[in-house]
Length: 440
Image 1 (cartoon, rainbow, N blue to C red):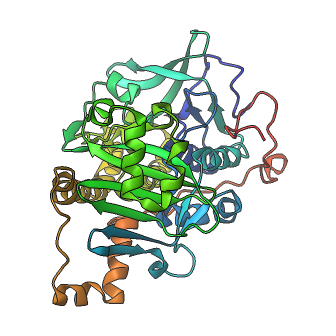
Image 2: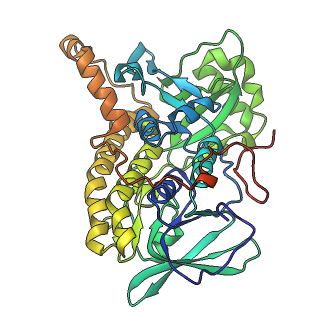
Image 3: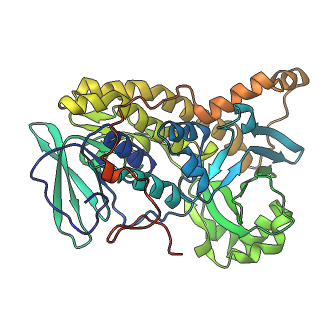
């Protein structure tokens, strides 16, 4: 039964693809391959999709992909906050801003939503297709190799029992700490990342501004994002900063937040302890080779991104779309060759390099000097402001930030599910299956 986490078994046969990782990239790829009529197993190590402050930024390019597979209207019906613009606030006042409304009439916003809502929607859609098998509580441990080629994955259930999935292709979509990638001997090359981010939330009250902003003042940087019912804040600190030594106790940190953004000073007491503050250790790295015979890495397993711009989820989903476009027919007729897998890397390498390079430049030119106590970059000259103020130029800038330099569109086949699976999935959970939504 698709989506099942109570029956773990060793498959006697071989599926077309085993996707390791039930995040945005893994669930998108699993859905696209199942839509193409293929048998696909998705392994997710957790028993639900509950993640706080994890990849909850749905960019316009992802909205367009969802529209192409008929999920746009379902997504906007889920609890979310639409962000139409983001502005930078410095000691000199408002600076550079991103106006997503320049992108047109439909995909002209960023949707901020709990990741469990987004992932549950993808899982529910996948279960409409008979070839889709999502296994929760399935922690991949290592690849299975035969004559130098990856032919499947071993995984453990919560009781520690070991199981196998044999597949013509294994896709590692299990994030920056990918065990499958490491098991296959693929090691990413690290790049500079001078910062970490402290994530926390404060309540949003009547009379608060609607604006989401990025603050850069007096050597301190913080994002303040409107999530509808609360503010999500990201306080930027130097890499591996000794937080408790820097502020002695959480009261000192509360004072720092209140000083940096006075409109929230009346509620910083909601940060009751360091337990309310989550640390994201920022990494930027990339594999030189994304594949081995029978194995392909995508998303953060291939290229870990900085949180700057919130583009990581979008880039990973674009990887998934390209993988389905290029490999679905190959999987239908046999096993993709190493050359076939390299076509995916060749197509997706430049977009990953571009966005990572952009993040590295911003970190070196803006973040690192600011955290060292330097002043924010000076405003551009009047002629430069006149050029960048042109609507066509601003639209191009926003598109590069949100779409990157190569946009993927869904071109893999769609085999409609049989009549008994054809009704759209609902939020009702079948017995023994977890969508990952919180109770109530």
